[in-house]
Amino acid sequence: MKLVSYTNIERQGYGILDGEYIIPLKEEDGFPKDLLSAISQGLEMDDLKELMGRHEGRLALKLVRIDAPFTRVNRNVICLGMNYKEHVEEMAAGMKRTGDLPKFPVYFTKMVDNFSGPDSCLNISDSPSEKVDYEVELAVIIGKDGKNISKEDAYDHIFGYTIANDFSARDLQTNHMQWFKGKSLDGFCGLGPVLVTKDEFPIEKNPSLSSYVNGDLRQSSSLDKLIFDIPTIIEDFSRGISLRAGDIILTGTPSGVGMGMKPPVFLKAGDVVTCKIDGIGELTHKMV
Figure 1: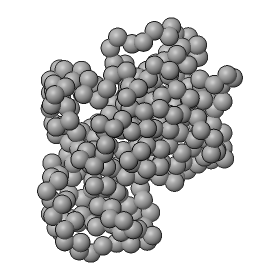
Figure 2 (figure 1 turned 120 degrees about the vertical axis):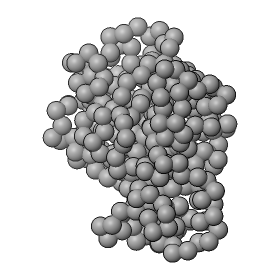
Figure 3 (figure 1 turned 90 degrees about the vertical axis):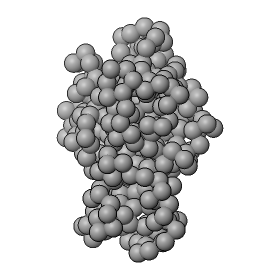
Figure 4 (figure 1 turned 60 degrees about the vertical axis):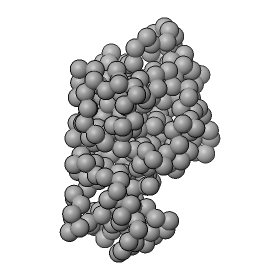
């Protein structure tokens, strides 16, 4: 099923998306106050299915604003770099590296002050960066704590999936010789519009992902093109490090980013970026 976070007349809530309606998950019914808390505290599919069966107190979708699934994070967002072959190749020249494929997953983190939700604006005019870029990615939401998790057990630790736009300040990445600050500017993590539970996301069919800038296709690939697939990522990262329910893993972006173009083309005020993943939907942001 699909879960959403929303604002309704200045009141924030979350619930199950049911066509043109939302079935709210309320504190008075025993649910935690927000979606991240619910997942962190072990939200069960059986509870959601029971609520779907009752269909009580539905809220019309047209009366709310859909927000990012999470308004906050428990820990830094875990990210994978260089996880699509073509993206490794296109970034080699711009980042002054070889085009060799990584032998091990390349990790970094994003420090997120606030997620940029669907159909929101990202202020890049006041940004310290003049080279803001886009990256469509599948975000994996961990649903169960674990450490030293095997590939065979990896999916047991996943709650669901959503779309991420891993906005990047390419000049800051280059200037500081690492990715942390260039990935962590305020608003530089788009997330949404919905969180799809793992039982309804067709991961075995290798869904496609794509991005568009002002309607022009920039990125287009599918999950079978990952260098390190999701079970491998979870097994490798959890070796010696505890994953916690509510952790977010961005699995990498395919080729077609602005920095990879010849010459590079970066985002400017007025640009509209849309990221799509089959089975989840579309995540759009406007640059201002």
